Image (cartoon, rainbow over all chains, first blue to last red; front, side, top):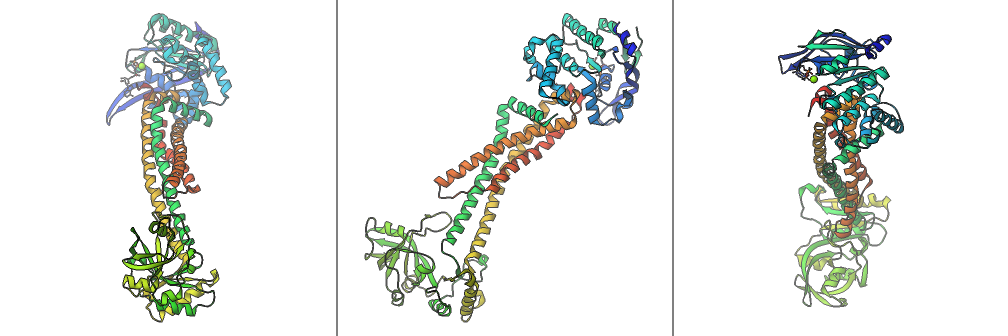
Length: 238
Length: 398
Ligand SMILES: Nc1ncnc2c1ncn2[C@@H]1O[C@H](COP(=O)(O)OP(=O)(O)OP(=O)(O)O)[C@@H](O)[C@H]1O
Ligand SMILES: [Mg+2]
């Protein structure tokens, strides 16, 4: 299993310690989405998060992706508590360490595939030419060398998700977070996409955390975290 | 994100919504255009009027009824012809330096032609003191004044209207029903009847004495004194004051120099110009509100894009800057086009209308500065709103 490879590196990438996330609705209605979650992700790890709808999977992923801060508890990256980092530092962390893959792709419709892949590079130093070359290489790596100039509307769902994966990889992140990446795709295409993500995880030593509803995918991960009502019901390694 | 990159993204977004961007720009464009155009007209009027006053010659003193406070409305004049003569006796050197007039409006008639014109009943020195030149015939003489002779010197337009294609010298005409003989025609001043002053060529000069009889008065409306040099203006003013004070109270007359009049008139017209600019500024403000509005729509439409950009590493600052730049580009383009149209409009007005128009450097700078400032001010709210969007919520929006 690919997870075993990561164990050699065994360096801790991120750590969630007793993470609580409570949404406030109006004045006094509180929705506890996560009620104390602790686990670790190592470099090169492959973790699947499963659980029924509303169990808090997306909430957890957003916290790992530092798009959100926990109500209490800690998310630690490279030993630093996310809650203590200023907004600009979180942006940097997302840009340099994390790649996102969404269920609904989230490509900008007016940009071509290559310009969509360039997007994260725009928020870091570099020349236009370097960015373009990296984006083209990333698109080639996901098998879309011949679709560079296509806009999202001119691509199939699977191709769009490949563009999104290229966008997540172009920054060479330490961690790829995928929230139901195959949720909008048919089974075969979904398997291709998962195979692509897994090959990247294995070959580039990138940690992969993927939310899924599909048991087959969960089985392939090194570890599966089962969320139930905002707590980890089963966090065993296989 | 680099400034260049941000500019590129802003342009892309504006081009993606071409029509909307154009319409939003239009609001700013109209505002800037009206600022430039109205200020140009105001400035044009100002230089035209002060130019007309300067055209009377230099170093003039105007002796007017009243204490110089124009707020009190027109005063009945206390000046008589003897005042002109007494001032003349006291002033030293320089030939004819004092003149006076009484002004009225009468119907002029000659061989079936009719014209209502300004009648200036003047002392013999009037043309010399006020730099009016004779084109043909002779001017009015001391003896014409002394004997109240019914002779007239016509303004150029008056002559052409009453005696089309003929030589008016020696012909007779009626002024207010009284027969006069034409002895001379004045050289054309030009400038025509602008909305800001009477037509200097559409008048007729008659001897003060016969004119006073015509108007049924023994008063003069104003006295003019020409100093021989700028340095002696104040000395002459003192003489005029002393002479008039012998007979009149201080509130009955005031002595104003040409420079003072140019200053006051210039100030008034400057204020007028600023009022025009302010009114035009309101339309610029409305244009700015339009920009703000469209930017808010744009932010709301692109909420998902903002969420995505944040997820990919954009800082609050990057997003804010992107939208701010978009607003500034929008208003900057509107400002530039509005400026071009304003200048073109001013030239058109100057060419076609009797209203002069002068585009000044400060109105250009103001227009461009203000339009960029409008983008900044009205872009800040939407841009900040964009920057502060919560990425999780923004990404979930559909
Ligand atoms: N912004 C929010 N405001 C209030 N409650 C929220 C918000 N986001 C999520 N929740 C609540 O938190 C709980 C967990 O939501 P979350 O989106 O993490 O579930 P999930 O496991 O991803 O579900 P699914 O499989 O349907 O995507 C749910 O009860 C949800 O209603
Ligand atoms: Mg979810």
